[in-house]
Image: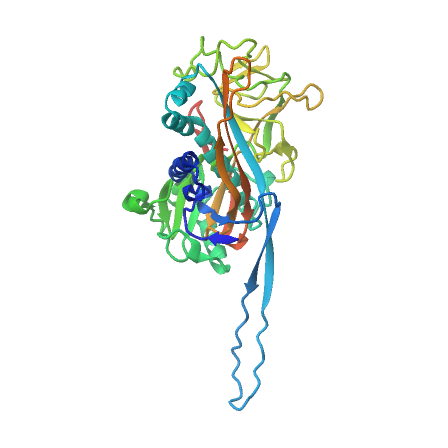
Length: 454
């Protein structure tokens, strides 16, 4: 096994394949990754030659001996030996994949047939590649949030205790900076433009807004905008403050994962592509004709048991998975791939139906019991701030890199063509002392007017 501590190392390596098309695809994905990913760029990469069917790999290292600082007799002939020990870590590997399908009449497919390289590049740029990048980024974020060194709000214990006053502020920054610098962190693995003892904070734009307001008028509260050092800026970086660089990302908000204000049952199966207004009749925000209006049997709404307590402009979470692991009983499980947040753009109160800003992109067709196919939840949003002292806190163990496949069409008219990918690896907590996770409240914009503390 080899560990690559170089910052910005990507999970894509054009040099590992002799297949020219796969090598070109790796270059394309690597460039997209560098431009668009946030969380995964702050995780190291472990490349291993272990067999790809092995579920785990054990890594061992030494615990440094303690030096003897006592003086010795100048006539002594035998010195006491310093004790040396070791530790092991087990990293895991999992399989991930994805798939898109295009009809032979689709423009994207036509471009691919006319020019394989140009057409596939368009598919990677507009759909498949973005799906891969988002998959890596979400998996990296979720693993970072599992780090055992964490805190909640101002002296709280879990999501359930978070109040609107538990915002990111100067006092919290001071405590976390001191906590990380007191640990035996791997500072040498930080970004080359980050000073020793410096931190990178991946957080929400709402938290950054709250922090700017908190610092206003305080002594020693200078912010250095990224425009003053943009040649060295990180992806998404907004400013730095007291040796902490702040990077904003929408992924830092766990929508409606806190205390629940409203929980509604979805009372009819929802299929991918449903839930948004009929694009032939209604434009979302007066501009967007969203979804497909000519599909047979499509429903342009989500059927609920009741819409009481919901309002146009609310950002709700549509989900089927629930968890009590974070302190909220039967709370939203943000880790589940089907969990998605959407903005309500219309409510049909007499029929208990809502319409969303975008369609639902996965099926909710399994009856969870009592003719309930999922849930709509409105609650307190949980904002996350991940403070990173070294990019070995979470590492990506790669057993087999991303491969793109274009299997042949198998239907009677050879009209549906698939573009798929898979890879084998997993994000693992490697040096927990390098990361501190802080969960807190924060500000989110509300489309119905103004902003609110979620």
